[in-house]
Image 1 (tube, rainbow, N blue to C red):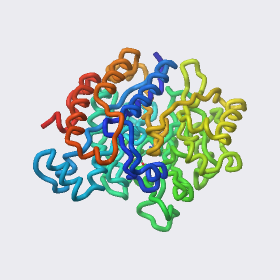
Image 2 (cartoon, rainbow, N blue to C red):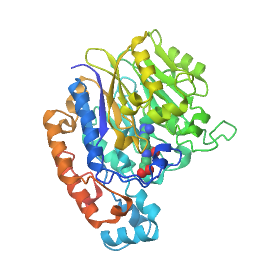
Image 3 (cartoon, rainbow, N blue to C red):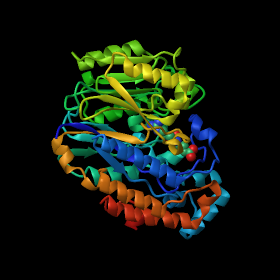
Length: 446
Ligand code: SUG
């Protein structure tokens, strides 16, 4: 067993729907009110997990959250039985109600920032759940995310769990979607790259004008402090405000890195030269590849539409680096041509594998949004909750579980069906047993 990078994918929850909740995320807005298929969404996610597991990757599973979030609605003043809370919230404040129904925890790139033990001061793996303050529906996630992470990485000698940052836009934190670890080998200390959208405490700095910058430099710096990262191996870089205004709401929509490769669009960063220098100086003598995609080959708009950069760049057990891309990349001539060119030129990337994750894509979530990366050495792998790791038996179990509990069609009116809450809780209760999580949900703790 050697040090590996595991991917923990979010299992899509039973209320997966399209409510147009994410201003600045073009797919979310343009698919608002479309009907969704939660069963298909969850099965598409499971297929991707199984395929990566079959490639020899360590593949984990992160449980979805309980929705509708009755506790959030009670906090907002809706009272009575669960059913009464749902009905009155839906009637009086449909937008708030729908936000409390979102299955958005499926995008686990936003679950937390994770620093491997090779990078941290106390040589433990550090986890900070993202507070996701910029969007109300996502700000409901961090506490339960923390419970789930603790139930999977449950060993204080190896894993350190922090509380999410203060819930305020000044410390807006979107987790691993804006964090990339670069290294020569997973076992060695790497450079941790934090990409932020704005300075919260300094108005003189550039920032987007149309869409929100969800991540602040102050949040990124706080996470780096909590994780005890070495200053000379930590890089903070600003995202180009123009691409945020074009719809790049997270850095992982415009850049992805793995080991000695950073794959990014020409317009991704505000100061690309500085970022390159800092990465080179942090890594030292490493054969590093900056793979920059020019606008002339793929426009920012085409990158957003196809999610060329929301691909997973992974290293297979035999050392080959491959790209896990959404089908939308294959369907675009410009992007498909570019990918064919990429795998035939001088860089470590050797192949592309396409997956259908359309149910997630329609809400602005590609393959990379669906996964949280956790680098684990041999000792750490041994103490991870084994029931949360994908294999043939787990795949069959989870497929059966989805087929038993999930609906294949939901529209926004279905969200107030009291039966949906009952179905969801029944499904999640069973899931916590399948994944040996214990009681992580509020309804299990009452
Ligand atoms: O936060 N969409 C998510 C998509 C997250 C993608 N993650 C990464 N890029 N890492 C978001 O904007 C839409 C929900 C709705 O509209 O129903 C949503 O939350």
